[in-house]
Image 1 (tube, one colour):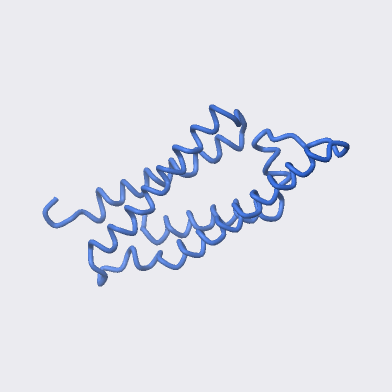
Image 2: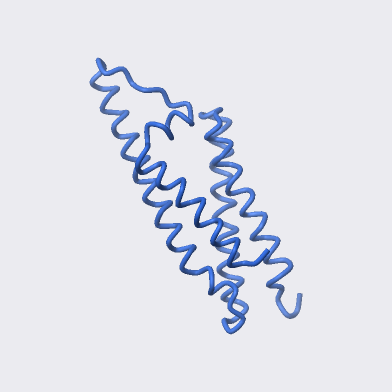
Length: 144
């Protein structure tokens, strides 16, 4: 698989999730097993509104991540760019996905226990594996 294709697919997935979190936070929170707060609880309603705000901010961050991924997709595959730079891009993406997967795994087994949690584990694990594979096979250093 081409590096540009992987980055484009990763960008599309994060865009979809970003839009979902930003525009449909109620739906996304339900995927993670976060129940609606009864309207007669003022403190509960305030807390739930804060949770919705963070969901929307997370969506905005995913959308931003998508634009960044889409912007660097050709750089990571450009043979005219230094090998260290291209390896740096894929290494950063692999590390970021490993960290995201570690956090998602921790939260899935500590808090979520939900389908949304499995989705947030699956996406970064798959892409971390792909980026590591690309680093090992396509962007090997000359002395490797």
